[in-house]
Image 1 (tube, rainbow, N blue to C red):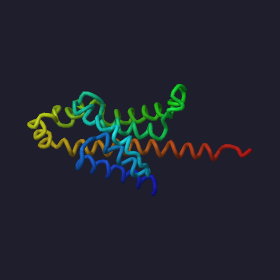
Image 2 (image 1 turned 180 degrees about the horizontal axis):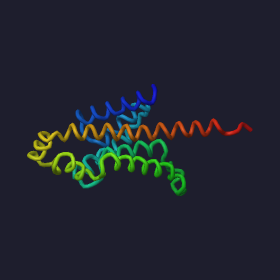
Image 3 (image 1 turned 90 degrees about the vertical axis):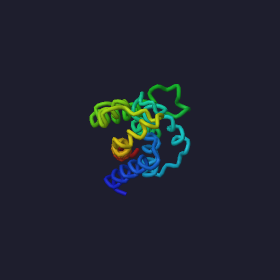
Length: 176
């Protein structure tokens, strides 16, 4: 599959997952992992508590940003055997910063409650049934699902670009 097809598919999958299943972090990871052919239920499960900031509080950064960061770290992060080696985390940190910068450029904030306020006029407490109804009426699921799709596409693009750069760099090495 070509890069552009992968980007469109990850956007569509992440958006559809968010509309149907909720949990922006898990939807982002699920879409990216499916496109990349990754089967890792542990990473998916670990993202559960990151929905709507943290634990549906809105008081944390967007779960889609968390999920995208987790996906980037899955491919470029430090392994347990390198835990004591600070430099082994640098690639993932730089790529996560790149995702953060793109996210901020697109959405102006990374805090879930601020995103809801910006796009819907206020924050919705999803533990409160009246607020849940108001969020549905205000179109929050559609707005969040679009954000999730865009963020999954941003993260996938960073992953694909970095993999391509590594492949190109490897091809440029002299044969000894």
